Image (cartoon, rainbow, N blue to C red; front, side, top):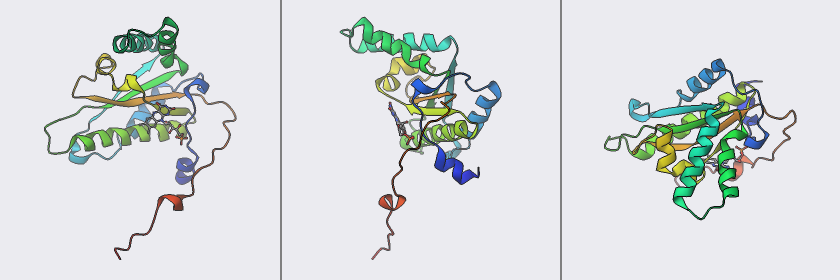
Length: 189
Ligand SMILES: Cc1cc2nc3c(=O)[nH]c(=O)nc-3n(C[C@H](O)[C@H](O)[C@H](O)COP(=O)(O)O)c2cc1C
């Protein structure tokens, strides 16, 4: 498959459908290397990744449940259990974030965009290696307690969780928009 076909064939796979095996150490290193090729204004290299797999996923689930309980003590045990189970859905969760330099001349938004571009490269690299993946966020990814537990202390920020694993044999096709619906020639006239 050539590179463009690879980019055009990437699709997200729900974490619930991502099975074993997860990426090897070598594949994780390749995915992170691809992520580090993201553009980065000012050479700040803000990208940081917390690799969560094996039993650590259970511990991350506990952090999620604790964070939810702290945000809203009325949550039932059943709902908390659902939070605990979130990281266990796929063999690998990569918590993607940015080490933010708040007073730097490069605006914070650009530091976050660099981290987002890195997460996108991580997704494409996972796809190139034959894995399925999906980028998810939700309230936990914006909770300072969750971020702190993963090593992202304010002003550092998480930009999301990339779940990675082996996709089902047949993931089906998804209809994509016509590119022309998202572009227009600007002539300045
Ligand atoms: C920053 C960001 C956060 C996202 N968070 C979620 C999420 O929490 N839950 C979800 O179902 N999809 C989320 N998505 C969307 C999926 O990752 C995915 O892009 C979407 O399901 C469309 O699938 P596709 O990537 O194959 O086009 C997020 C995407 C981005 C870029």
